[in-house]
Image 1 (cartoon, helix red, strand yellow):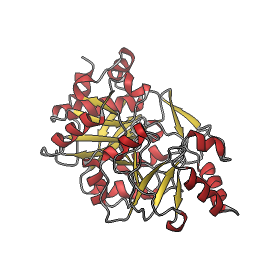
Image 2 (tube, rainbow, N blue to C red; image 1 turned 180 degrees about the vertical axis):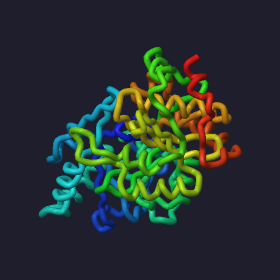
Image 3 (tube, rainbow, N blue to C red; image 1 turned 90 degrees about the vertical axis):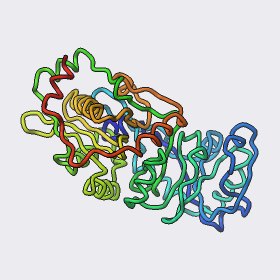
Image 4 (cartoon, rainbow, N blue to C red; image 1 turned 120 degrees about the vertical axis):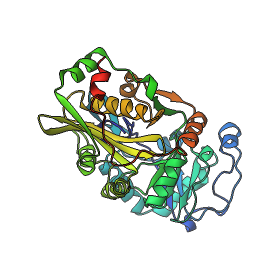
Length: 354
């Protein structure tokens, strides 16, 4: 869930990756079996890789001509958020397709060990996820690429603490960052100004009334950005989850107009926030606080916020180690789910203002 629809205030950063066909890879390059050893001692344990995404470190970025790394910035509810522009991805893609592409890829492959580059697996539709302990530290949490957004794959991912995050020109990318930003339902913080906004009664909140409209709101272009990570493929996938009762939306209304909202996935009594948006100040905050207070009544104890932002911190969210987050997930997803469609209790907003 995030501002500008990004991963609950997800911070999108310009991270480079390159998909290399098998014939461009040295035969001994593959997935590291113990990423901790690699990061600490520079030792590799290799297996053959059918396909791979190669992550280049800062030295490789400096050594190879690249488009500008400066991200685009947008603000919703006064919160910064950075996203990879599709134009830059197209430029990088065109560069790789140009003359001399094979020579550049061979050079990157040869530099990998010296510059401590890392390789993540490219999954086929039937491949299982690797252990989340194999996720990269830079970019934080990148675990795998490929596979698909089938209902079964998405539910399996969330149950393992993994979520998808990619752009139109990207393969499907899977993430499990460490630490993990979470909001415990007993720790939500409602500021005096936000309490005043809720008490005024100007905004109304609903649950599961118009999931598609909320996703479209989250995917709307923002100033300074020419793309969104909420692709058509992503929209269709989460609509399927909503149709069978696993995805949910919060709608915030002002004068009968949809002015904000958020959506996410629920397994058992665990809620995984995906994205949020605001068209007027405080709208997404009102929606998030109302959701957290409602699911607390239902026995939910934790909301996954994915990545840290000041916006979420101001509402009481905090980072915890990934291992601790996964313990919460394993416990909560086993509990009996709340029947869909979800609805707010009539007295909910009044209790927030007390």
